[in-house]
Image (tube, rainbow, N blue to C red; front, side):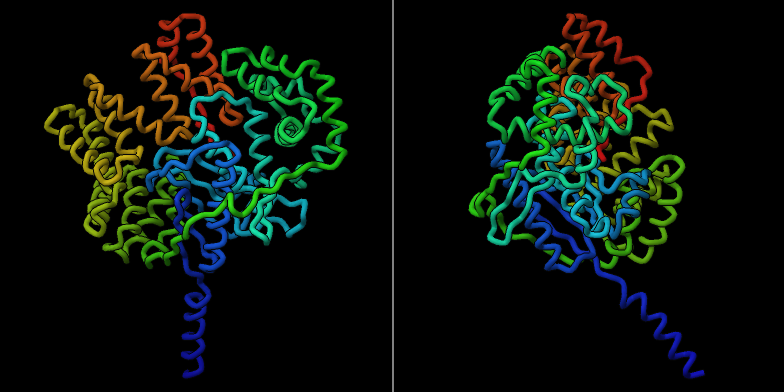
Amino acid sequence: MMLRTLLAAVLLAVPAAARADWYEASTGHFVIYSEQKPEKLKKFATELERFDKLARFINSAKDQPIGPANRLTVYVVDTTSQVARLAGSDSVAGFYRPRAGGSLAIVPRSSGNGDANDLSPQQILLHEYAHHLMWSLYPSTVFPSWYIEGSAELLATTRYDKDGTMVIGLPPQYRGYSLLDGNWLPADKMMIADTLKLNDTQTEGLYGRGWLLNHYLVFGDKRKGQLMAYLQALNNGKSAKEAATAFGDLKQLDRELERYKTGSFTARRAGAEITQVGEVAIRQLTPGEAATMDVRIRSKNGVNAKTAPGVYADAKKAAAPYPNDAGAQLVLAEAAYDAKDYAVSEAAADRAIAANAKAVDGYVYKAMCRMALAEKAKDFSKETWNPIRKLIAAGNRIDPQDPEPLILYYRSYIEQGVAVPDMAKDALYDAFIYAPQDSGLRLNTAMMLLKDRDARARSLLAPLAYQPHGKGLAEFAQLLVAKIDAGDIDGAIAALDTDRKVDDGDDS
């Protein structure tokens, strides 16, 4: 009996002892959650910050301070199979969700078998962050899909050397087969890929040949100035075919690329002094935060009517022992809201605010719950909606750069069904400035501007027309831009009322 009791005690102790602790690494541009040891996580976070510094140096871009809500949140999970489950696709090894107030990337701690030809977690994340940074630095610039993916691949292979230097321009070994096995996407098709329905082989070619053409134009000497001329033509309103004339004969360009890919590739070094960064703040998550991390990742990744109830059930169970933990209660507030249990969501938000008066999301979820209930009750009175706006304002005062309260402030007038004041319109535009990566926010802001016949609408729509992900969104943006360019503003405004299914363009 004693032996059985002792054995049971040992077995009960094993999971707790084996369970790794969750840590948060916080830097100027990233918040990273991982079960890695603190020293490894600190190194990982430092390298990401150095990559940000390098990318800004390459683009001659100043490092403007950003608010806490606008940093990229990175969740490091154990394996690529976990990533695939979250992405809903077996072929995805890492992905990025561009969202106002909550852009996130999910990457595996390890992938493949360590072979040089495998796509590594670091390369996945650098590729995704290159997208995030491109939208941040050039929010109103048109880039074609081959350039978007090719330039991300160009940065994804960045190497960190022991002497502190960083090397850019290395070939993506994981694209080797698609690059060497013929020409999967000829230049004439690559230039108009945004208007084509690409098959799997051509899509892979968009990445591989996109990298090859980027490398050739950036590192090669033969075609100096052509890339800039091409991009300028696109941004001056030229069609993809017209802009491509900057490269001359595209069949000749293909022949040059075929020769170029079999040679040796030039790489460049950036000295350690270029990428010096500040300290990384590391903290261990509270027991409540750690207990709800799994459901938090699933919730932040996104739910639908089918998956929301299951996530909510898990959130209730995980958060129940931690009523005074702000992090745990915010996870519950989000999951309950997504499952349309607004009373539980608001109560959880209240507990989060009581535990942490600076919990912006607590005010966001309180406001969202009350908006949903008011809409359900068809209550559009100022006695209901003015207090909702006070909640939104309270969140905004805590972090004026958080896009979510700004968006909610604008939405509150739309959903109440009253005229939107200029202050609320300015709030939505400010939200876009803080989160230009969010395609849905960009589209909604452009629609607002278009209805007001504001010329800025086109500059927000044009980049969407070249989205490599989310074809419905790209096609809708192309339609609106075409009508604007034809002077048919009334037609563009009328098109806003058509019933369209628009993909949000999340990247993976």
